[in-house]
Amino acid sequence: MKFDRSVKIAPSILSADFANFGAEIEAVEAQGADWIHVDVMDGHFVPNITFGPATCAAIRPHIKTVMDVHLMIAPVDPYIQAFADAGADVITAHVEAGPHIHRTLQAIRATGAKAGLALNPGTPAEAAAPLLDLVDLICVMTVNPGFGGQKFIHSCVQKVTELREMIGDREVHIEIDGGVDPTTAPLVVAAGADVLVAGSAVFKGGSVENPAPYGENIRAIRASV
Ligand SMILES: O=C(CO)[C@@H](O)[C@H](O)COP(=O)(O)O
Ligand SMILES: [Fe+2]
Image (tube, rainbow, N blue to C red):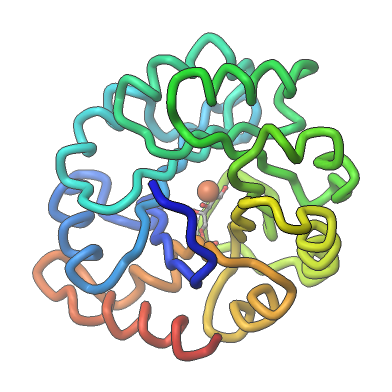
């Protein structure tokens, strides 16, 4: 995975048809997705349950781009290798998910995957300061994690500005996750974000049988920035 600062759109399959992930991924990639965002939830760290490494391994052959795995689980460390073995290109863990995030990020990089650090809306940018040399991506949550289709929290935009300043010339992506659409995308890109996760705003109106809306929705976000 080569670093590049261009804006990338990462549809979240949380808003796809769970009975048809393979075809959904192929459809949304054919319609212009740059990365595929995979939300893993445990019903403990967040109040919702999705799926685990077996599902990630099953969908991997359908992903031609980047498999971006967002772990909303606690603990994280016992499962890192399983998600790496499932083929994740990026593995993101939450700073709030345990007492040893430094060790977690080291463990992710040791698998060969890129290491992501997610910050909940209530966590300040400073939480990332001691970790900047251990991360390849910082995921700024712009909703409280757990569900798709929530409203973008505007107070998080300032955090993106602060993080981009802190990152300096390091090769670190800033990913935005939650409530991204053509209205909110320009705000976070102007603040320094380069990866835009979008679930409901990409999958709305389309289906595997009628994927054209996926493309229209992706192009609308891209045009907005
Ligand atoms: O991690 C999460 C939610 O916890 C996200 O990746 C959502 O799936 C984004 O959904 P939208 O807000 O774009 O509908
Ligand atoms: Fe996510």
